[in-house]
Image 1 (cartoon, rainbow, N blue to C red):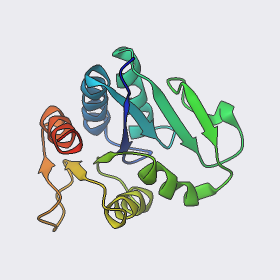
Image 2: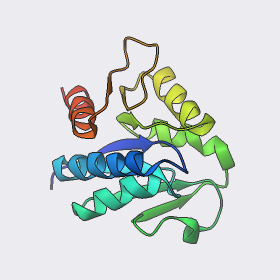
Image 3: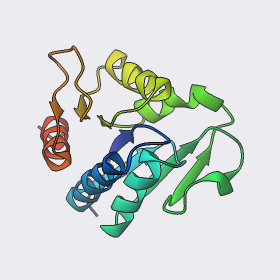
Image 4: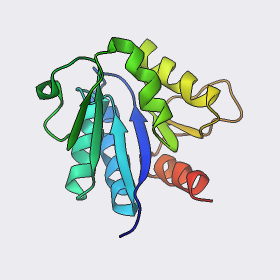
Length: 153
């Protein structure tokens, strides 16, 4: 059995439709390639990424802020309740080997910061940052492939 590579996909809980579609496309490609998709387990980008991964037959893990596994979106295979609220964001970043970030708000920025502080590779999609070490791509497939190449080198 080939080991799966955990990749976190982060972004807004209330994204525009084109960002949701982009996250779904990226997650589907990553899952087909051998990634386990890790996310916060709720709606928005998290649900879109989970849906894309499931379409590819991939495994999804949701690190939930509360204590109810039923709060996970319907595409989460393994809902892990943390009871940590927003503090669970550090877990989303730390269990992954790399992070693909879509536009979001403070929760997304905290996950991205935790990933960078931990030395994890981060690639953004449609979210240019003023950091030359974080590649940004408008095309979700290019973003996913870029992160995969960095993680798997």
